[in-house]
Length: 151
Image (tube, rainbow, N blue to C red):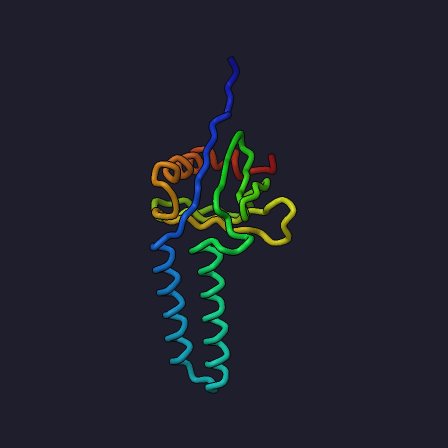
């Protein structure tokens, strides 16, 4: 029998409180820095509005996964990536750098048929702990083969 890599690794994503707290704190720090700088009030108001809009869109995309380009699940089978966007599975290819720590998994994916890349940002409470642990181990142990080329 030959060596097979037919192990399925699937992670179903859910809202993360860690992610929400990190985003709220960073955007609040941005608001404070904005109001402490010495620019005209109209610029402060305009930039504060843009920051609030960014926070809202980020919340919809990454925290509650309500937008059409939000990843709701990811599958890895035989070095082929698939992502679930709005209930439809698409092929995907990882691009760029990958961050895998005990608190964070983060990387960019180019999705088949989509114009813009999708981003996967996972905190410890972003998915079932067993699914996330298996995915993290697979990324650490097989990162050279998973991220080198386009299968």
